[in-house]
Image 1 (cartoon, rainbow, N blue to C red):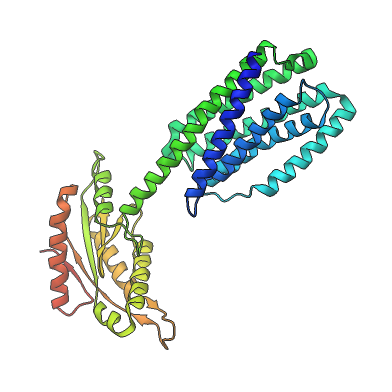
Image 2 (image 1 turned 30 degrees about the horizontal axis):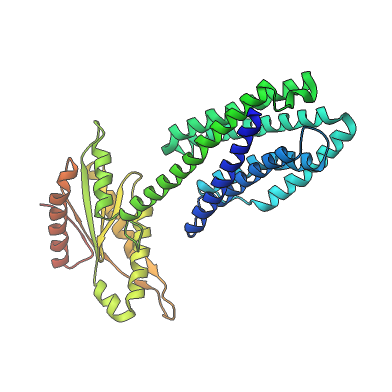
Length: 385
């Protein structure tokens, strides 16, 4: 009776959160963060438990075959949801349909060859293997695609690994004691469903928390970047400097300010769309020529900035020359224009500064050097006096 009540409450919990995940996915435009797959996984598992309650005790019947098939498909749906959450596109319906057909056929074959005990033991074994793979996948994600979620991933690995252990114990009990071990009054069945309820209670809110955290991180990243070029804006530049100078061994930084020469003429002659295209191409040039770890920014208009971290005079000189030369060689094709558009830039370089609070002074120094370069004929590199 206790296990039956727990399974009934578990069904309601799973179906409720399936609806909630589906609604959240509907509200997320574009990247749904795997909510549709998580919703399907909850619906599959909830339906499997409903069939278990309606189908009576363990044995060979259509409800049991569908129940086992839905149970095996559930981890795959969750796995696809996790892949999509981390931005890895993964198909859902075709793999699920293929797995369902293959496992249904395997059940018929095992039932015919070895009987119902072997069929239930096969279910336990398959679930152990799937949860083992999921646990290893979560541990791998902690070292690769989920480095910022290590605590959450460690909790998931522990809970999923525990589920694998529970299924392994169930498989051993079925092999040793037959189908009596699956009776709802069996002590292990009560413990198993209590653990499943605990797992569902923990994982569903945790998934919603991860979605909220991912959306918050995306909003923070959007607020730190220029919408046209996706380079850092001033807020993102300050955050990057705070991160750099927060390290005890951090060295000084230098600021390069770049201003495209005669950019107003480009807008007036070819239109603002052409001007935006030039800005995006220049941003790509800066990204590809900056050193690893340097901060590339667009403060506004046709001005760009590169903060060189831990660079000596020679390193900054080489970077300024490389960027200046790359912009001179840039050819931007325009629709309908007979020749690509070319431009030049003037570069101003600040003196070294040693903290985020030195950014304003460095900008003033680099800006003054830049305008000296403009006055001296443009397309040149000037250093702060």
